[in-house]
Amino acid sequence: MAQTTHSTATQQLQRLQDPNVIVTNTNGTVVVYSPLTGNEIPQGLATDGSGSGFSLPALLWIAFSFTVGVPLMLAGFRGWRLSTGAAIGLSVAVTSWSVFVNTLDNVGISDITLTALVLVLFCLGFLFGLLEVGRMVGLLQLGIQGGLTIGIRIVLLRSLLLVPEPAAFFVNWLLIAFCGLASAVLVIWKQRVGLLIGSASVGTFFCALGIDLVVNQQSGMSRGLRYLIDRNRYHVVDTTSNGYFPPTSTLVMIALSIALTPAFAYAQHKLFKGPFCPIDDDDIESLHASNETPVGDEAKLSGEEALKTSPPNTSPVSALSHLKPLPEDRCPTPAATEKVRATEGNAFTKDS
Image (cartoon, rainbow, N blue to C red; front, side):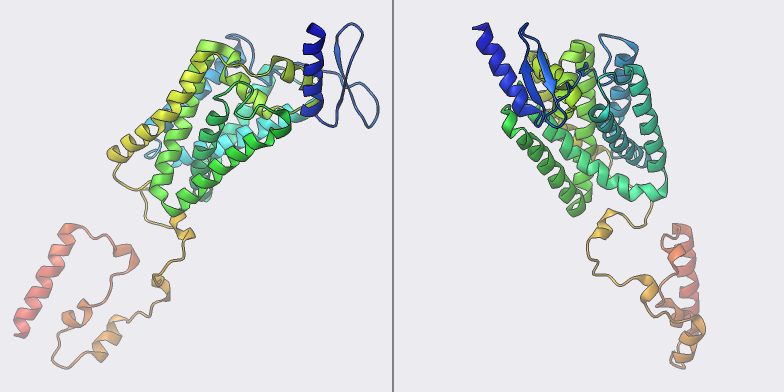
C-alpha cells in the first residue's frame, strides 16, 4: 500500500515538473534527474523568503501585509498618489519575488535576504508611483491587481488549488489572467468603479494574508501562494510532497475577504464622492476616443478682433462677454464672478 502511494506521488512529480525525470532509489528517496545531462538535480526547501513561525522574515511580511492592505481597503480610492505608488510597488515586488524563487538554485539565499530585496524593490516602485509620470501606469495597475487578487483567492479555495490535476495546472493561471483582464477593461470603461473595486480587492487580499500569517503562519495562504507560483526545478520534491492543504480557518478567511470586497468598495464610494485624482488633467479615461475638440485646436478671437468685428452700437463689454475664459480661469472664485457681473450691468445701463 505504501509502495503504491509512493509510486503515485512519483508519477505526479513527473507530470508536474517536466522535463525533469523522477526516479526512486532503493531506500525510497525521490531523486530528480535532468533528461538533458543525466545529472541529478539537487533539491532545496521552498521557503521562498517566508521564514518560519514568527521569525524576522515572517514578521516583516505580516507588517507589510497590513501596511499595504489596511489603507487600500479603507481609503484606497482617496489615497491618490499613495495608492498608485502602492500599486506599482506591488507589481515590482511580486514580479521580482516570482523571478527570484523560480531561478535560484537549491542553495538559494537566506529568507531575510530575499525578503529585504523584495521590500527594497517595493519601495523603489512606490516612489516611482508617487511621481506624475507613474500615475497613469499606477491607475491601470491598481485595477488589474484587483482582478488578479480575486482570481488568486478563488484558486486558493481548494486543496492543491482549484484545478489540482498537474496536467491542467495552467487552467488555474488562465482563470487568474481572465480576472485580471476583466478588471483592466473595467477600469478603462468605468474608471471610478474599476478603481473602487481594485482598491478594496487588493486591500482585503493583503489584510486576509496578514491575519492568516498570524493565525496559521506558513501553512495557510503563504503555502498556497508558494505552491501556485514556485515552479523551480530545485524545489520540485518540497513543493509536491508538502503540497497545499489549507486549514479550515484559511479557507474561511479567503472566502470572507472575497465577500467583503464589494462592501468595502461601496463604502469608499459613499465616503469619497470626488474623483480619484484631485487635479483636472488627463486621466485613464483619455484611453477612450474623445468627442470633444481640444481647447488648443479651437480658433480663438483676441479682444481687438472682437472689437473690430462687433456691431457699431455694441459696448466693448458686450463684445467680449461671449469669449471663453483662458484655461487658467476655468474655476473663478464666486467673488470674482459677482464683480464681473456687476461691471457688465453698469456698462449696459450706461449704453441704454
